[in-house]
Each structure stands twice: as C-alpha cells, then as structure tokens.
Length: 308
Image (cartoon, rainbow, N blue to C red; front, side, top):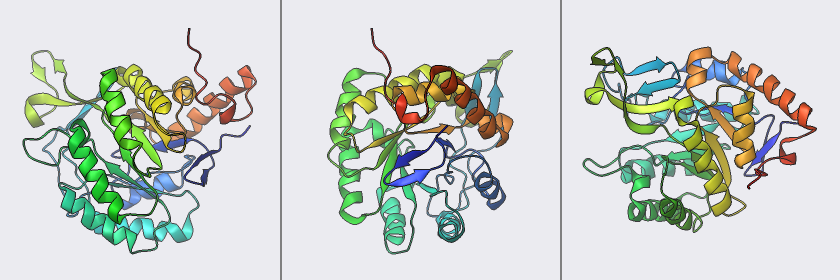
C-alpha cells in the first residue's frame, strides 16, 4: 500500500509530518523527528535572532486539544539554517524550513540568505503570526499579504509556501485565494491554531500570557481545519498543494484531511501528547481504512470528498 505524496516534485514516503512549533525547536527534537516514521518534518518557525518567548505556563493540554501562547520561542535563524543545510547531505526527507520574521525586512533578510545557499528543501513562510505591532496577522490583512508576496517573489526563486490562519467567511476564502493564485507558490499550510481562545479551570485561566488568551488546537479545531483545506483545494491552482493541519488524533482524521484535498498532513497537539510514536500508529490506522475501502494509494481518494 502506497502512502507516497508529492509536493514541488519532491517525493515523500508518506503524508505525515509535524506541525511547526511542535517537538522541533532544539537539535535533539529535530533529530528525533528525522529518525521517526514521518514522511518529512519542519523546523520551528524562526526569527532572525533567538527568542525566549512568553512566560510559562504558556502551553496546556486540554481534554479535546490544547491552548497555547508561546510567543515564538526559537533558537534563531542561524541555528536552523545550519541544521537544514546539514540535512541536505544526510537525509532524504526533504525538510521544510519555517520562517516567521517579526517584520517583512526580517523575512527578506532570511530569504536572501537561503536563496544564496545550497538549500534543497522547502520554505514555509508563516503569515499567521503578528509581525507589526497594532496590526492584524499578515494573512488577515489582504492588502498587506499582496505586498509581502510581491516582495518575497521578487527575490526568492526556490520552492516556497505559506502558512495561513483559519478563515471563517466564504468571501475571505475567495479574497485570499485570488491573491495566492497570482504567485508561484508550491503549497499552502492550513490551519494555524484558532487564535484568542480562553480556557478556564475553576475560576482561573490556565495559561499566563495575554490574560489567558491563546491559540486553540486539537479536536476543537478539526471541522474548521477541514473546511479550510477543502476550500483552498477547490479555489487554488492545481499546482499549489495543500498541507492540512488541525485536529489529527487518529487515522480517520488523516483520511479526512486527505479526502478534503490535502497532500500532506501535519500533526500538532497529538504529537505533543504522544511523541513521535504517533506517526507509526497513524500510518497503521490510515492503511487499515484504505484497505477496508479498497484504496491502494492516496491519489485514489485525495480530494474526492462527496457532496450531497
């Protein structure tokens, strides 16, 4: 049974990977991901300089998912750049390199360095983190997204995709898709966590930053994640792959992301809870579903969600 998937002419042995931010910040975490059963992996979204992030507690597991306000903790661009360049020479997983600069200028500086070096993987530009004080996330500002992508592709010529926040309005899907279709993107990752949720235990919030407000993930967000995967699969050019993320706890969840049109599926909250053993379990559960339905490979059903 074949679980291979292809993005930007790169073949992945299976469709599973981590979500950026989960088990991928330190050298040891990245090494564990590289040795896991995942088809590939992605680095922590990085900024030009290292960041400690928000004060703890900043991540809490919940019954149906998780809530976090991490504040982009990372070891800095130079650390992850060195790591992914070394991966070029010793690993066949076609690693993804995630960037989340605090300004357009910072992102352009990082992209310029990658452009001039022998990086063979794919860059994920995170447009779902705030980068201008007092302004919305880049991908919620449609005019700003257009400007950012014009600047990015005036310089960067290697395979690149973007990570998006969740959208909830049909008009917003259409507006963002119209912008994305103008550029030579290789993939779109959706969704990031649903922002500014609040979880209470007894009479107290459970995380410290922002008065307890944080991004919600896990089973709470799966219906929203599937809707975003489906709409962008239908609205974007056929050559722009979709990477689905949100609410993946079991093989059925992976199957549904693929059914909606995803080419790869990221695992976030469940990876935090279970560790990289989750990949092997999810692969086995997905294969069982495919066998029951008579599917021999992902392309037998990918994107073929039935509508009434």
